[in-house]
Length: 212
Image (cartoon, rainbow, N blue to C red):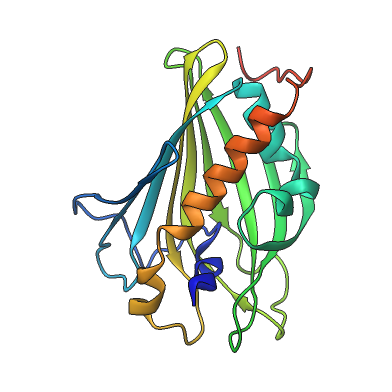
């Protein structure tokens, strides 16, 4: 039952659900990661937001996010991920499949990431958008809906605050009350895995021209 969190990972723009003015509620504060959730107007499913600090550079963060081939190594319950299209270093489109517990079908999605750097605020925002019809639907999977973003703020030269926020609809017959019970699992494990991966690896020599 705990594995239901696989249904709420990496989703994108959907007009039927919009962020409301509801207050964020702290659900979890473990291992330096805080996970919040809140009700969303005209939507059955809660949105989540998780925040942590990571020792590393913005370049390390971008390198890890852009390395789609290795996404299953840190994305919570991600079964596979394939890059479909890339424009420079600031836009990528990829397809991924997330594991779902029996008896539910695995979930799939096509995601577009837009990387935007604010040099004055020293902040990187990665907007996540779903491209629902970019590929034909596969009857073996249920396609997800939603939207989200990553936000990374440079705290010092080698330290950053990372936020991961999503509004999700896992699709299919998953009841909203069940999905909402585990809304903290995916962001927590995703950030924990990302933090461990960046901090355990040597600093990359990769430098991105759009980050100054």
